[in-house]
Image (cartoon, rainbow, N blue to C red):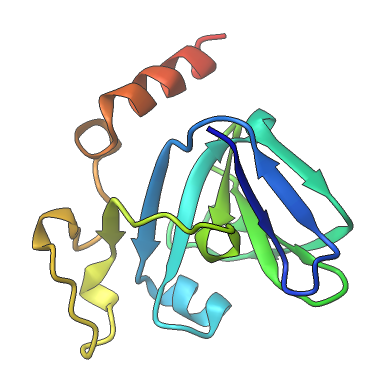
Length: 151
């Protein structure tokens, strides 16, 4: 499975060379501030499955854990394409809407902070805060992550 995406002006494009690990919508206050929106949808992938073409810049932003993350954006149009969370070694989070074919979230996190006018139909994938990865991610993704971490 190969996925492709780009920024708004087309100066930066990317390719994901293997199946993503997980896609989630985050409604936390930090994500709302950094996006200027009600939530963000991130698709988690392995960093070595990511092929970037074009020039990006980055900035350090806060997270609820206090560990922070580095957000990467096109230095021409400013579109935020992906980020690296300081607690997620060997993984990056793609801004799912920058994909040519965006993916559906498998979970909604920090719904305790979601805007009251947002209605999530599938309550089974909602989590008040962060989820337990071991019980939420697909078994195949957990296996791949375990293999990567043990190499």
